[in-house]
Amino acid sequence: AQTVTQSQPEMSVQEAETVTLSCTYDTSESDYYLFWYKQPPSRQMILVIRQEAYKQQNATENRFSVNFQKAAKSFSLKISDSQLGDAAMYFCAYQGGSEKLVFGKGMKLTVNP
Amino acid sequence: DGGITQSPKYLFRKEGQNVTLSCEQNLNHDAMYWYRQDPGQGLRLIYYSQIVNDFQKGDIAEGYSVSREKKESFPLTVTSAQKNPTAFYLCASSIARVSIYEQYFGPGTRLTVT
Image (tube, rainbow over all chains, first blue to last red; front, top):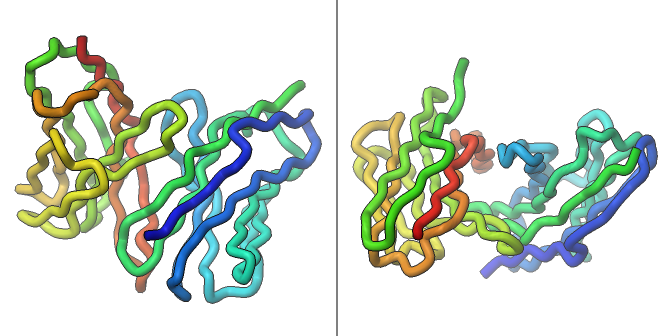
């Protein structure tokens, strides 16, 4: 079974600084997708970014980018120019051959003004 | 606006009572999902459905039941057999694009059972 691990339960960053959230996963599949979801205090889950495993190029969405290391099974999220609105729980998720998503336990990000 | 609605936002029940959480989507998505979220546990899959009148158990289906009579609706019943029903419940839906099943989430329902 696939597993997703987010080893840091909490992190903090100063406004306008850069922060990197780590995620590792375990799978024997070669084709899969990886996602980062954000859950602000409203608890609405919002898709931040996704990465297709067959693509070598790292995905980027405005201030959010990933560092996808397929051999190491690592999928970190970098948030540049952090804003107060980035404060949230962040979940890493894996989707392989089935349509089911496997989530990590999440990481709470605090943004300090 | 297209989206997923869950109602109510907060729900209170007495122990021993069944309770049904609603989930409606107007995104024309084929697949729908129910997750449970507990502090420090992330999201765990309860049930999912790929087409009308068909659904599969997820990782923690015991004590829950679902139905999928319409494409737009996927209600979840928390039965009295669920030993720890107090949790935050999230509904999601997805449309298959090639092989990716990008999921969109509703706002969630906080269930408290006393």
